[in-house]
Image (cartoon, helix red, strand yellow):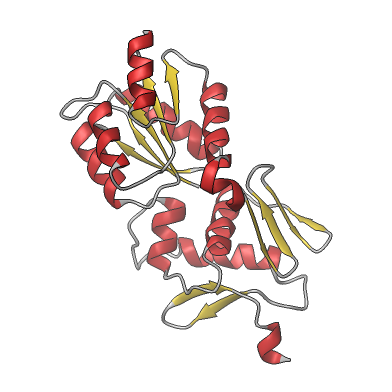
Length: 227
């Protein structure tokens, strides 16, 4: 899952990004309103954690702009805790509202709850042939075998399953899973794909993860084609 955190407090922003990455999310961090708004409107995110008190453009205006074109889940995060501000945030289209200071475990639980709701509710489980992945329980299985995946392997498999049948270039994988601009000198994608393939394909007769030379990788069942 790809999250955008818009938070101008440096220590808190870094803390949130580190904690959420360690929890298995891919996280982009914006440190002011203008940057956050631009990323929110152009990025492909599953949810946004949005601070209210931001330099440049405040959180309420960012939320208003987002809601003109998107129903993406938004959790507002702010030092303001009076009823009027909470009502304003929720009536502006926020899906949840959390006042500072907060426990990270509560933030994490609220984000996961948002991701389970609405249109995303049907996409918390993915399957291809006998390969299954559950985002809620963070379990992956093939047949009756439980797959032991690292956080990055889980994120990579999640992306491949969400876009199964599509050829995904290395640049897309690097951006969506590692949050990095693709550098042709790095082999981080190839290494991760090889390790993932060892777990989801090598022990099984039918292969699902395929390399498309010069283009990228695709997760799909080709059993019918070869029959």
